[in-house]
Amino acid sequence: MNNLTTRKSRSRKGLSILLLLLILFIGIRVVWGNGTFAAELIPISTVKFATAPETVEEAKFRIVIDAGHGGKDPGAIGASGAYEKDFNLSLAKKLYQLLEQEPLFESRLTREDDQFIELEERTAMANDWYADVLVSIHANTFEDPAVSGTETLYYNADSIALAEALQGEVASALNIRDRGMRKEDFVILTSTQMPSVIVEVGYLTNPQEETLLLSSDGQDRAAKAIFEGLKNYFSQQHQRNHDRVDPAADDSALFRNRNQQLSENKIIFSGPPDDGKKVALTFDDGPNPTVTPKVLDILKENDVQATFFILGQQVNANIDLLRRIIEEGHAIGNHSWSHPKFDSLSVEEAMNEIEKTQSALENAIGYRPSLFRPPYGALDNDMLDQLQQMNLMAVNWTVDTMDWSGNSAAEIMELVREQIYPGGIILLHDSSRNNRFDNTLDALEILIPELKAEGYSFVTVPEMLDAASAQ
Image (cartoon, rainbow, N blue to C red; front, side, top):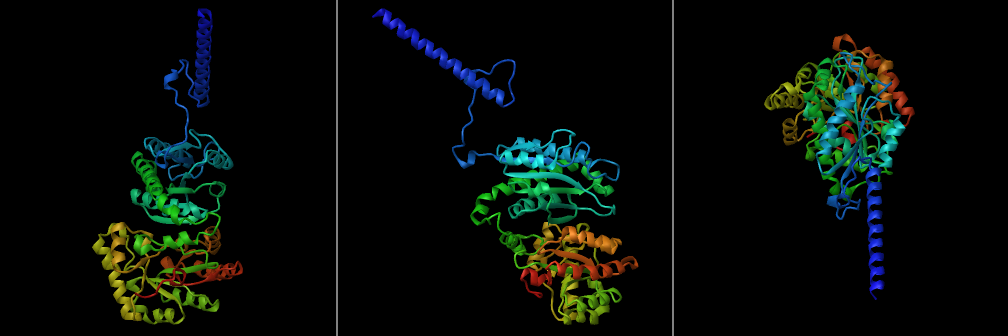
């Protein structure tokens, strides 16, 4: 009996040792697999095995941060000679640090140093990790050093909400021009299986903006803005999921949600893309007695309607021209009295610019327009609040032709072809700034037939947004 008891005791002891060794082996494999194996083994009591979260609240949102360019690909070259790839990496790391401190998120970088990684590899990282979103960090470039502002690019319908959340935060935090959101078919956006955006933080080719982007303060503000935008985006996902559109379907419903701008206190950049291939031509800074009649002649010849955003100080001298605009089926909007930079004005001064123009237009054409386009496309939240109270809809654009800068017709068309999509709003000017306007007229002669041949139809902005022309 005693021998039997001894054998059973030894057997149990042996099984215990085997079990302990098995647990130790599994613990080592787990630690090794996570890339954190050290010379000293982690005690068995501290090994934690991965388990599925018990509740939705315990789940972490997975964020992939892509620092654009790298290695042999420097990206844009700034006014001072700085490389975009270095700015992108620096900002991406700052964003990563913020995300790591937030229990809500789990994040990864597509690159941690100056190395070249193919675009397909970057998207594969996000797809293989089953990321919730991908945010690609970039800086912009343009030949004209005066061009400035931040914009967010997207491709798929399910990326619009993410783009919107980040765009507003970055523009506000850096206090630079809000260039809005734009649809683009870049690989980093089209090859991902989750909402993905490219944040073009600002223009390195603009000396003032480059100084801001390269500064520690500027990058801290940009990183915090993207971080806050991500928090806002995910905090809204439970509600959004109730109304979400199938990502494989068109993005019309999400665009309609965006275009309830008066209630959401936002600026409109485009119309819904589902109602045919519609596009809106818009002309700023007129009317001009030399240029506007020529623009109207081209529009009439091609049976196209457009929208003219009028400067108040131009109204009284051009009443007959304004009436012709209306008689030929075009729409009119308010573009302020004297085209100031609204970020240099108080709210009271800005509203005075708008109200003076509304009154002048009412006296000239018999009604007060429902549309307002801010000079340089910039408005702060307080001004947007006031616009809402004035029952005015703020409208910017998706296609910036840069015709005012003297771009040739060929350069204007290149920008149109790159940026146009159904629901797009094209920005042109019918003023003879610096006595240069032939480029705009020449571009119109090409633009209208070309887009018509591609199946586009031209509508006014009120038609595109299904909104009234007058208050």
